Image (tube, rainbow, N blue to C red; front, side):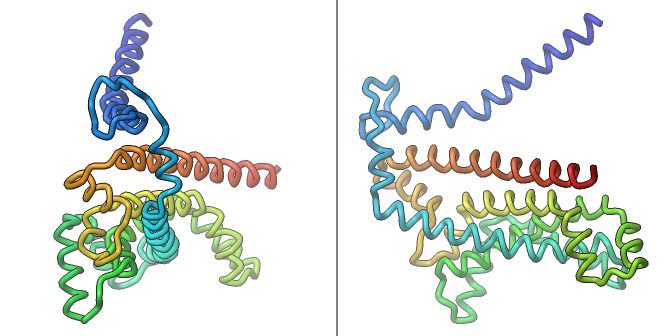
Length: 268
């Protein structure tokens, strides 16, 4: 018993150490965002929240947020839809080229994003397509859709096919089975895949750098400001993005919890 308790204490200390190691840079960025000084300096002598007010009132920041949000939302919707059918294709059904399909759909994950972004840029140029934020959507989909498909497939592999067969034996149509059985059982995986897709697209820099053209997303702007012409808006927008991501995660888990709770109440 004492050994078990000491092991738990050691694991708790180790976990706290890892958490501090991961979030310590964010804490320093948070301090920089409330500094009155125009340049980063520690210790911070004067504190102010003026940069948050400027960020909320800036037209440039508003345009960056609209562009990044547009890309992330479209990528999320498209990747979840493709992932749903793609995961069912290789996790639920047997067909001739199933294993080849599995390898091909997951292959883009293993490419470095910079190489993939450059390849897509050259492909767009060869087709005569001018890069904009819309081409960035395509680039993000190439890399993010396989990840979303893998997440949904994990849920689909644990799917009991007997439920669909029983519904079919009772006379349910394919559309009814999809709406009443398949979608509800895969909903946690779909929500998780959508969450990952949104966050990966929102914070993606390498693919956006090569494929947005004259448009610019928030990560690109932050990088440009860090390389040349630093502004206190950089840490401010960084903290705001992190806070927004945390709220998104909380909302997603709340949705999953509400769906599971309503399902349990319905069964009772």
